[in-house]
Amino acid sequence: MNTLSKLTPFDNESELIHKLYASLTDKDGFHTFLQVLGKSIGASACILTGLQRSPIAIRYIWQIGLPEDFTSKFRKNGMLERDTVLNLAVKDQLRNFSTCFDALQEMKSNTLHHSYQKQ
Image 1 (cartoon, helix red, strand yellow):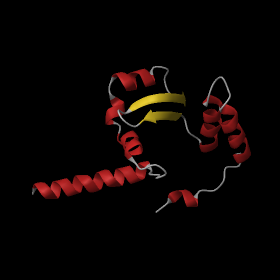
Image 2: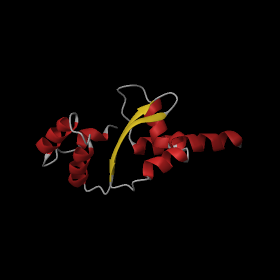
Image 3: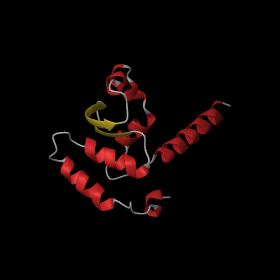
């Protein structure tokens, strides 16, 4: 089921679109857009990442609300290779959209499937 079709527009949708387009030429990149987006949805942190599919690697990253050393620790500890949601995103077919909920359901299904096979 596609949950995106049930979303309602943001009250500040016009501002979000303008900030997004302005980010393309802003020296700070997408930070301003993420600040406005974070406020719009009541998030304490937002992250926008450009990933290389194979081998999996972070190419671009903009974030707000996370500690300064978050990305370096993330990379140093090999979390990118173990992050379920990121791996789902890079292995998904282009133009296919999956949510974290979809990933959790798939993980539960695979776990149940594997436990039945072992019996």
